[in-house]
Image (tube, rainbow, N blue to C red; front, top):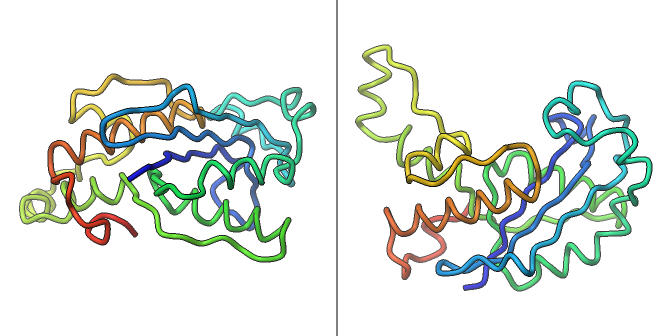
Length: 193
């Protein structure tokens, strides 16, 4: 099954008050990451770029001054997603921001199932009997952030908060999750949301 890892950097965490500033996509399968087919776009956000967000994603005012509106890249982005299973790390950012951006420009939203590597990590490390026992003992929950999740599989640490790098990191993480916890024949309904 062809897949594509998707990541976005935004001006904040609320799709009603903030906007997308960059998008990265990396096509892959369970056996291969297709870096030659990757895409990365910086886009002009429809809302002001907050100084706090620059500290996270390092996209500056001068970069977005030259960037196109999301509408300009939308058809190319949709072509990258078409026919592929979309994989994200924390669907509660990518899904609502993508839906809001498409709805604002095309008049209707865009919702589809995704595989969320963060949700898979939560199932494995926060929703088990062992996780409940740890909470009962007063221990902090296991981190399911992207770099912490990757570390558990022996994957290298990447500099975070860059849409293309995080998309690559997400693709590698799903490959490791499937290799360690699932069979390649696992029905999609067991892992998507």
